[in-house]
Amino acid sequence: MATGIKDKVAVLGMGCSKFGERWESGAEELMVEAYIEALQDAGIETDQIEAAWFSTHVDEQSVGKGGTPLSTTLRLPNIPVTRVENFCASGSDAFRGAVYAVAAGACDIALALGVEKLKDTGYGGLPAGSRGTLQPQIGFNGSAPGNFAQLASAYRAKHGVNKDDLKRAMAHVSVKSHANGSINPKAHLRKKITEDQAINAPIIAEPLGLFDCCGVSDGAAAAIVTTPEIARSLGKSDLVTVKALQLSLSNGLEASHNSWDGSYFHTARIAAKKAYEEAGVTKPRERISMMEVHDCFSITELVTMEDLFISPEGGAVTDVMDGFYDADGGVPCQIDGGLKCFGHPIGASGLRMLYEMYLQLQGRAGERQLSDPKLGLTHNLGGAPFSNVCSVCIVGAEGA
Image (cartoon, rainbow, N blue to C red; front, side, top):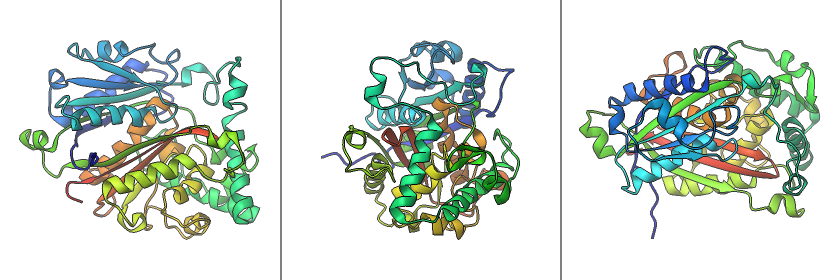
C-alpha cells in the first residue's frame, strides 16, 4: 500500500527572478535568472541534474512548445525534460513531477522550473482563448473577475454575510498582502494601501474592486530536489523536506448539476484533506506555521481559508478581520505579498509560493522572516470556480 512521500524528498536549492514588467528581459533571461540562483543555492553543477519538468501556460506568448526551450536555454546535459501545463497550477505540477521522480528512485537530482512572459501581450488581464466549438460546453465563458465575483456572491448568500462586512474583509486581505509585499525586493507591486483605498477603488466586477484583483506580470521560479541522504552528502543541514503534495481536478460535478452551491472550491477541500493525511497533520490551524495561497482575487484567499480547514465554515471573515492571517497573526498568509503583489506569471506562481516557504524555513527571508516556522503550506489553484485544478503542498523542517 502506498505510504506517500513524507520526508522522502528534500529541497536542495531554489531560485526566483524579480517579478514585474520585465520589458528588458525575454522568457529565457527570466529562466536563467531563477535557475542560476537555484543552482548556486544547491551547490551543484548542471551536469548533476538528471531530469527536469518545465511549466509554462501560454506557450505562444512565452517560449514555444515542448521541453526544448528549457533544455537549450540552460544547456542541460541531454536529459529528459517534460513540459507541464495545468492551468494556473502548472508550476506546482512541475514541482510534483520532479518530487515524484526523486521519491520513486528514478533519478537522484531533478529540476522544476516555471516561467511566463505576459506583459508583452499588451493585454491587461490573462490572455483569453478564442471561442471555438467546445468552449461553451466546458464552461470558460466570461472574464476571470466575473467568474470569481460570483464566488463572492455565493459565499455571502450561503453564510448570510453583510455586503459591507465582506467588502471590508476583502479589503483587509489586500491591505495585509500589500504591507507584506512592500518589503519584498522581488515583488512587482511594493506600495502599501489603506482599507479606504481598497473599498473605494473602481469596481472591476461587483463586488471586486481594483485592489481585489491580482495583476499580470513576468517572472520565473525554480526548485532543485533530491533525497535527504544525498542532500546531507553534499554538505546540507537543516533540510527542508516535502511532507505532502496532492493534486485534485474537477470532474465536472460543479458545472453539471446544482449539488455545488458555488461558495467554495470542491477540489481544494479534497486536496487539503489528502495532503494533511499524507503529512500526518490532524489540526492544521495549530500545526501550519504559514501559508502561500492562490490569491488571484481577495475573495479567493478568504474562501480558501475555509477550504484548507484553517478557518471554520463561515468563519473566515471573522478570522481575517481579527488579523489571524496577518504577518503577526496565528497563521501568516502571503508573507511575501502573494499574487496580489507579485502578479501572476502563470507557469511560475506555484514555484514562487514554494520559494517563500523555503526561505522562511531556512531563516533567510530577511525583513519578512517569521519566528521559528515549522510547516509551510502552498495552495495553487487553476481554472475557474466551476471547473478547476488545485494543488496543496506542505513543506517543513525534517522531522517536523
